[in-house]
Length: 285
Image 1 (spheres, rainbow, N blue to C red):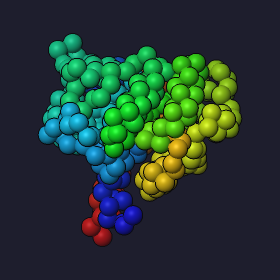
Image 2: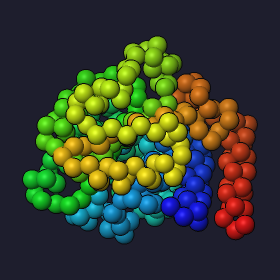
Image 3: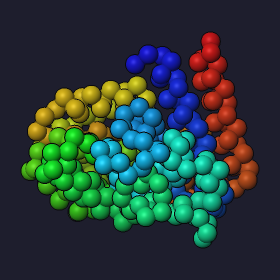
Image 4: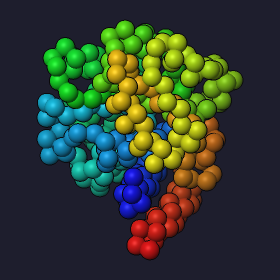
C-alpha cells in the first residue's frame, strides 16, 4: 500500500475515533473502549475493502458486514456516517429516544446495517448464514464479521465456527478484537479463552494473527491473505488496545461501557485532534 493511501485511511480512523467519543459523550452512555480498539477494522472494511454503495445500501451484490459485538455500535455508526450512509451530524442523536441510532445496530432503521445485533454470540451465526446463502445461490459477495474476545465465552460462537468450517465458507472472514479486556476485567480472569489461535485452528479455520491489530497496513494485508485461502473461512485475531487513541482510556476495562464527562471528552478530542494534525501534516509533507 502506498503512503498516501495509508495516511488517508489513518486519518479516517482518527475521525472515526473522534465520532465515537462524541457519540458516547452526547448520550452519556455507550461503549467507547471496544469501539476505539476496532477503528482500524471499521476503516479498512468501509473505506478500502468492501464492495458497497452508500447511495444503494441494499444492492444485491454488496459485501455484508455483521457487528457481532453489537454494543460497539458507536464505531460502526461513525464509519457509516463518514462513508456517506447518513449525515455525520446525526451521530449526536446516538441513543436518544427520538433517534434511529439505537444503542445496538438495527437493520430496520440504520442505512448500511446488514444485521441487527446486540445479544453476544448471535451475530457471527447470522454472518455464517449469509455466507451459506451466498454459496447456495452462487453469489460472489463476501461476508465479514467482528467479534469481541469476551464474546468468545458464548457457546453459540463455537457452533457457528463449526458450521462455517463444515460448509467450507471461504467467502466468510471474521475478526476477533483481542484487546484482552471485557466489562468485568481481564478476559484471562473472567473466563480464560486461551489459546484462541489454537482453538480456531482446531475448528478448521484459516487463522491469521496480528500482534498489532491497530496497525492499519497490517490489517489491510489480511484481506488478500483471506481471499487466497480456498475451502476454509478465515479468522483474524487482532491484538489491539482497548480505548486506543485516548490515553486515559487505553487498556482500562473501566471504559468498556462508560461515558466521559466534559473534561474527559475535551481531553480525548484534544488528543485526537493533535493526531489528525500530525497525520495531515505527513500527508502534505
